[in-house]
Image (tube, rainbow, N blue to C red; front, side, top):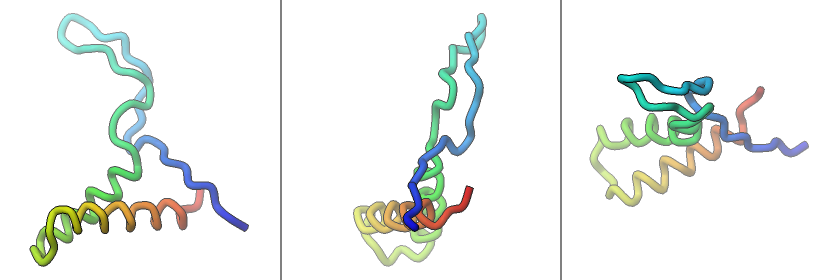
Length: 73
């Protein structure tokens, strides 16, 4: 059975119309869970400083995609 990859927002919010001090926010806008997973992995890889930024980015999203594929809902 194949799993559907669903890339939900990492930190979902409801719609917010804004006020005098804050701009409006679209519902579910912002960082995706894929971006969140990739950022976590990239931060760890950068500690080792053995890869180029391009390698880190490519590997980070490859790991994020694998994590989304294995994720259960």
